[in-house]
Image (spheres, one colour):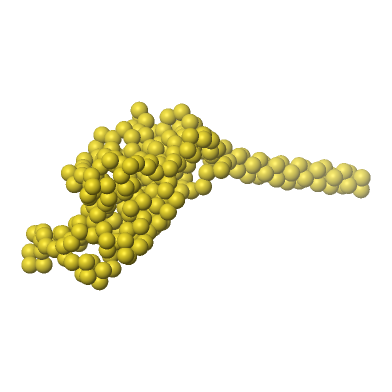
Length: 286
């Protein structure tokens, strides 16, 4: 009888142990399946996005205009990585290198600054339409070193914008005074600036007596100096939608714009003989 009871206890313990181990194994496998499913779904999502970059980038609503795209490109790190054609071609004065994806650093372009600038040759291009663009450029113009860095963007057949290459080159010299060399000295040397101002300066602004009218008047050099207008001293930016920016142009228009819409002003320059002069200032910001 004693042996029978012991045998029964042993059998009961074995059954309980089996049930416990079975539940533990089932619970462990359920947790493992859950984590594997989560990891796999993340990998699939990433692989789809990676493949779309390499094969065909799908357009989104930001691609409707280059301005919208550029804003997202400069303010969304993940989106920027997806919209660069890696390995990215970088040309430094005809020396070609390739930038691999792992070495790219997030570039905020001009959005890390409180202002940006735009360049034009003609007033008719100031209000130009930018629809239907297939390619555009963002440019850094380094006044002190005399170099221009161009970010070359292109709209793919799918309609999505991507960065195709970056080109760094010297500012082209000519027999006439180069505008960028002139402007660097104009912004940094007050005596030189005074010598290159046509007086009186044409001044265009909002009419204080009529909210819907523009007033054209004049100012002298002393007024210009007293106002202490901010001038970029080292670097200019530019978004090239296809407007002309020729070295031999007889006029140059520099728009200085704040990041807040409605803030900014415009400087007008013209070439007299072989040299540049400043002759018109426009501020119709809100």
